[in-house]
Amino acid sequence: RARAREERWEHFKASVRAKVEHPFRVINRQFGYTKVRYRGLAKNTAQVQTLFALSNLWMVRRHLLPARG
Image (cartoon, rainbow, N blue to C red; front, side, top):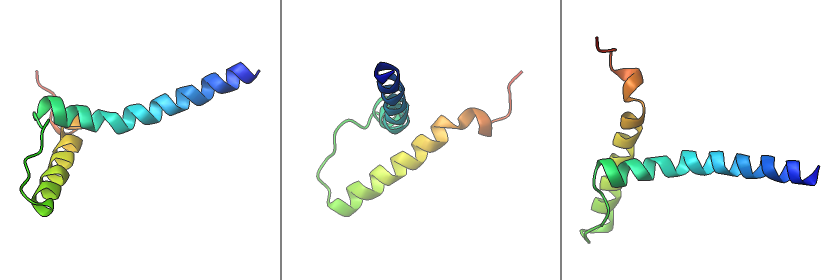
């Protein structure tokens, strides 16, 4: 019984972790954003926020674009 509860808890944590880490994977792999040049906090913040917005669009692109065929 305790083991089943622990497995449910671990499954819940893994699902949350996947939702949080997926945008970082898109930013790193799809957009090549692996290192930050020092350009000032405001510019880096603006770039990261833009990349996360693009990441959101990337993840829902199938719903936004019409089906090909």
